[in-house]
Image (cartoon, rainbow, N blue to C red; front, side):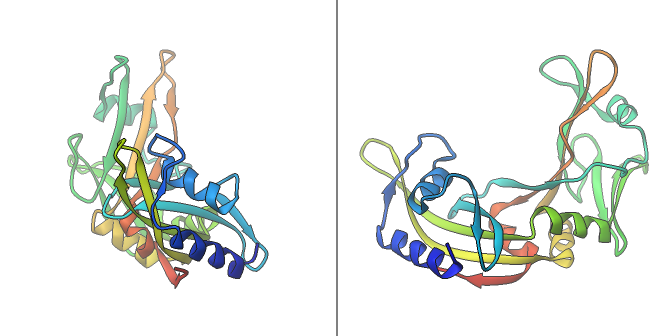
Length: 229
């Protein structure tokens, strides 16, 4: 479908008012929208814009979404040493480091510092643990999430406690913004999510260092915003 046809479908969905969730889990908002649009995945192909990721969110509810993971070549200290030095025992009794890192120190003493050239991760003992080049970070962000359609919905519960959605606002977001991304990191809205632990062999299991943002601030990560609905 073209962007014009997509906007027409969104307008028709808005006119439906509240619709019952087609799935009981938290993912119901996305699955219900995809079903109403007649698509099978959260990526849509528009001939005038190419493939675009589709995200939907509940208004007045803020959760974190992963924008991308970027891990390669950033560590100034071997990851196993980072876990051994600053980690803790997880529920499986493994030495682990699974936490959000912001510009203010977390419980593990880790924090972020933004400069014009890079994003750095420090410990309060002044050890530089990781560093991302700002230009490379933007290039990676642009490659992983070049454009996005964000659909917002009001929610309520019916008499059977089944969630219902009214999809009534949507934006086309394009051109990932380095300034926006770094500014949101400085403001604490974008976090670095560490997700690693030591295996029994002594090696490191790293699920990818994720850059995550509060959904309500996703719009500010892009330089271009077009209202679709």
